[in-house]
Length: 480
Image (tube, rainbow, N blue to C red; front, side):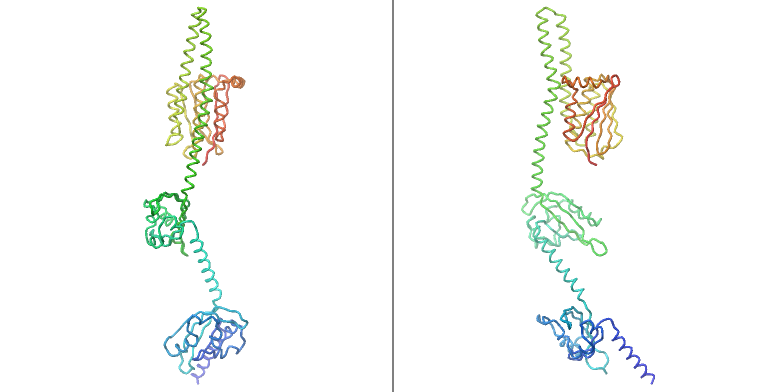
């Protein structure tokens, strides 16, 4: 009695679990026809109580199913009942009562009790969303593959050991190697970069899990032809953020580099012409005026000699000798300035060298102060050149006009400008004197300095007080 009651309770519990399960369950006979279905299966397929009995999952399946030679549901049930297989799982589209198609995963297991009719237990899960996501991912992968294959860029995937895993049509065109010839080969060798730079970029991506952008290199195609590349290496990460591979996207920039080199050549030629024009102006301001003065004095000396005024003529010849010496000094200084260019080790090195030479040749003490490290400033090459020329012209004016014993060069920065303040302890001058000199063409090179500064976006200003020296302030743009 107790045993019968226990079995009854167990049967009732099994029935309750069957009915209340949140997943579709069906019991079929040995021919695959449904004998019993729970409420979850009714709701899933849109049928009412008893509507599914005697139906087969073959009848509920999409009409296209079986066209490719798949086993029918009935045949699978037969194999299960015959003991040929213990369990099976299949995915197929089922048609709901209202005509909708859903994707379902069917898990089939034979009934284990010998006293029950032959058949199977079929658990039915709705996997429509899963299949939709799977299909979307497949479409996305197909679209991505299409983009990769149609791209003109060389797109290559690389293993963490540096071997090529994929090679698109753009890579075949760029490097000249067919896909089957390079898969499994080292990237640095197949891409014409036997040096260590490509390997270093790959190692950096693996170590940091961060991309390396716009890496420029010179490589060789399969036929030995050189090619300039710009490459971005990006990491492929797994769900834990670990690098499992690298994507390399390379672009041929040979034509761009050629055009840039042509442009640089044109700019250099223009700069040379411009420098010649500036030199011509400086020669006119200095040498031409001195020679005109000599010419006029020579005419005066001839008249004095004709009048037998030997003492006066000798005095003027002495002054002419001084002018000639000063002119010679100016020419030498200009020649030396032309040879003084920013050194390979940087603008600061060239400036220090020039200041040392200026002090030695003129016997004017030079104090140079640069409290901030100039290595943090990025001066364009043209800015460096004009900056140096302006400093040279300012010091030349100190030598010729200031009657100074000492000059100080202070280098500071402010608002993305590098500022040089050149101060002397000479005789100074008034603003009126500067304006009068400019009107007479004797403007101490101020116009030349200002023109040079404006060429590169800078400025030059002069401050002076009679008896207290002068100061030239030069401002030049720079990039951090």
